Length: 165
Figure (tube, rainbow, N blue to C red):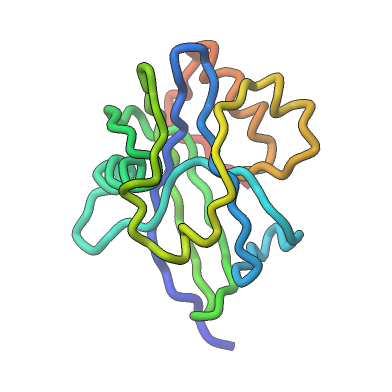
């Protein structure tokens, strides 16, 4: 068995003025999350890989711009997770940091999305309330997202990053 390739990642928990979170619906049947191999679309926070020599916060800012066209100050590191993915290009381990950011009057655009695979996997975006996530039958990543978001929306930030299962 081959060791996975390691690619650090940064994701953004982007909240708007009403306390809603921006999530992107993706569906790429060629990528399987080994911890959650269920097929079909899922809602994720904006984010992606950290380039060589790039700081996580800088990657979060860049990827937020590429995937949404939104510029926002990147706030504190809130959560950590490790994704293990099986892709056509092999196995990947993505140690991921989630950062909080806030948007004022945000308008989403895909004009800056340069990755063809991401564009092909993109199904849409939506601003979600915690209550809407709680009652939705849709699939959200990370798991337990509504419970993770509720304190953030209430202004309660963790003093150290929370390690997600």
